[in-house]
Image 1 (tube, rainbow, N blue to C red):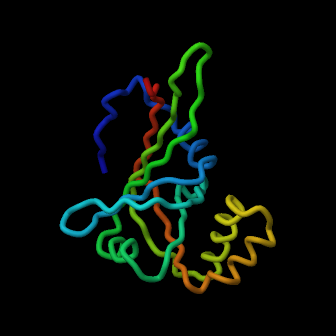
Image 2 (cartoon, rainbow, N blue to C red; image 1 turned 120 degrees about the horizontal axis):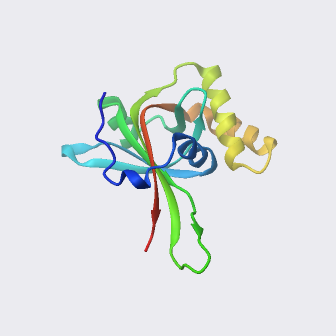
Length: 159
């Protein structure tokens, strides 16, 4: 699929920079097609697999996010880093990443559990804490995969 070129192309960053942000940042916003034609954005925790070009996240086995994804798997995802200051400047320079793709639900339980472990290691303080959470909540959650069809990133000065 062909996507529109970035208007502010001089601020575009390389895919390697986008990948670094996806690997480092802990939160982002997933936007799916919502009710009555309105977008449905939802904050999520995520794990990015560079080898698979896929963003993984989890969610309940019922609810708005699941209903919207089942109705239309097309989605967009956005995250951004904490940025940096150049010496003598007050405004941060922030790299944002926008991904477009399609969301699927993993149906392989062993693979889902493996992804949950990778996701958990990004957030929990120990391997034991990850295992405890998987034991407690795994049966109540789906693991979703957003396969990247398009990825763009931009470095912006907030001034």
